[in-house]
Amino acid sequence: MAKNSQYRRYTRSTAGNIGYFTILILASIVMVFPLFYCIITSFKPLDELLIFPPKFIVRRPTLSNYRALPALLSNLNIPISRYLFNTVFITVVTTFGSIIIGSLAAFSFSKSKLKGAKVCFGIIQTMMLYNAATLGVPQYLIFSKLGLIDTYWVYILPSLASTVHCFLMKQFMDASVNQSLLEAARIDGAGVLSTYWKIVMPIMRPAVMTVLLFSFQAMWATVPGGTIFSEQYKTLPYVMSSVAAGGIARTGSSMAITVILMIPPIAVFLFTQSNVLETMSNSGIKE
Amino acid sequence: MKKSLNNGLKRSIKESTVYYLIMAPFMVLFFTFGILPILASMVLSFFDYDMVSSPIFIGFDNYIRMFTRDQAFFGVVGTTLKFAVLVGPGGYILAFILAWMINEFPRPVRVFLTFIFYVPSLVGNALYIWQIMFSGDSYAYINNLLISFGFITEPIQWFQNTQYNFILIVIIQLWMSMGMSFLANIAGLQNVNTELYEAGAIDGIKTRWHELWYITMPSMKTILLFSAVMQIQTAFSMGTLQQTLVGYPSVNNSVDTLVLLISDVGTARYEMGYAAALSVFLFVIIIIFRYAIGALLNLVGKSDR
Image 1 (cartoon, rainbow over the protein chains, first blue to last red):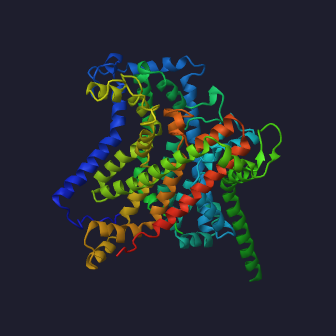
Image 2 (cartoon, helix red, strand yellow):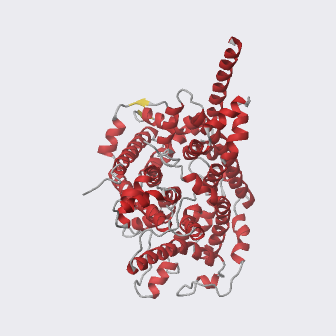
C-alpha cells in the first residue's frame, strides 16, 4: 500500500489543472447532492416542503418527520420493530455465515492442492458474472421445490455462498498467507482446522473486514422479491418504499427513514475502509 | 521407518478429508443456488411447465416462440442491450477515470474522495431520493425548479415519459455504480510499481496519456478484468430500479429489461419453460460480453503506432 510515491511525474498545464479540479468538484457535487437533499428534506416541516421555488436550506428544522415514522408504519398489521428485526437478523446471520463458510472454502481452494479444487474455483470465478437478479426465476423454482418460499432462508442461503466474497478471500489468501508458515505449523503437529483458525484467520483480517462491508451493505438493502408473501418476513427497506409511495405529504418522512437506513452502512464503511483497499488490490482475475 | 511413512500417509488422507469437508458447505450452497439454476434452465427450456402439471417436452418451441412469436422480446432485448452498453462501459470507464483522478492525492484526501464517490452505492436504498426529486407533480423538486425558471409550464411525468425515463434510469444507475469495481481500481492504481514509471520516463514516455496506456493499465490488467466482470454483472441485472421508479411493463418497453421480462413470465404467469429459455438466452449474452471484453483488454498497452 505504501508504494504510492509522492513525486509529481508530469506537471499539468494551468488549463489542465483547472479542467482536472472542475471535473472532480462537479463529480463530487453530483454524487453527494441527492444525499444532501435527502437529509435536508428529512428536517423540513410540511409547509417548507411546499415553498415555491424550493429551497436548499431548512428555515425551521424539525424532528416531526422522524417522530411521525412509528405512527405512519403502525397502520400496517406488523409493528415497525418486526421489519427492523428481519433486516438486522438476515444481515447479521448472512454476514457472519458467509465469512465463515466462504473463508473455509477459500482456505481449501488456496492451500489444499485437492483434486478438482482448481476446476471448482474456475467455475466460481466465472459465476461471478451472475447474481440473484439474473438467476432469479430458476432460483425461484429451486426455492419452491425445497419448500423455502416465504421463509427467511430465501434471503440467507443464496447469499451465504457468495462467489465474489469467496473469490476475494481466496485471492487475498494466495497473496498473503505464506506456504512455509503453514508447513511449519504442520510439522509442529497442527491440524487443518487449528491452522485455519490460529494462523490463517488472523492474517485474513483485511479480507474478512472487506467481506463484512460488502455483505452488510447488500443484505441491509435487501427488499423481498417474489419469494416472500407474508408481511411478517418483509424487511425495513420494503416499508420504506411504501412510505415513499405516499406522495408529497409523506416526502419528509420517507426521507427521514432513508436517512436512518443510510447510517449503518456508512458506519460499517468507516469502520472497515482501511482494510478494503488492501483486499481489493488482490482482486485481479488471471486468465 | 515404515510405521512413520504409514502415519504420514494417514495424516495426509485425514487432512484431505478435512479440506473436502470445510469446502463442502460453500460448494453445496453454491451448487444449489448458483449452478443448479443454470442447469435447470437449460433442461426446462425444452419443456412446457406451469409448476402444477408435469412438464411436457416441446423441443425447441420455447426458443422458436422467443424469436418469432413474442411481441415484447425484441423490444426488451434492445432495451437491455442499450442499458448494458451505456451502463456497462459507461460505469466501467467512469469507475476507472475517477479512481485515476484521485490516485495522486495524499491519503486523507484520497480516502475522503473515495467515500464521496462510493457513498451512493453504499446506501443501496437511496434511489427513493430520485423518485421524490423527479416526482411527477409540480411540487416535486425538479419540476418546481424548471417551472419557476420558466423552462416548462406543465409538470413533466419524468418516469412515465418515454423521452426522459431511459436516460434518467441510466444516470441513476451510473450514480450508484461506483461500487466494488471503483474500489478495486483505486487499490490497483495504488499498487502499480513506481519504478515502472521512472523506467518509462527514461524510455521516452512523454505524456500522462501514454503513461496511462503503456504502463498503468497493463500493470493492472487483472484488476481491470475483475471490474469488467462486476460491471457486466450490474449492467445485465438491472431491473429493480426500473420496477421501482417506472413500473413494469413500461410504455413501449422503453425501460424494460430481460430480467424483468423473465420474472414476469416466470413468477407472474408461471410459464416456467419459457422463462427458462429466456434465462438461457440471458446467460449466453452475458458470457459473450465477458469474453468480448476480455479480448478487448488484451489490446491494452499495445502500440497503435
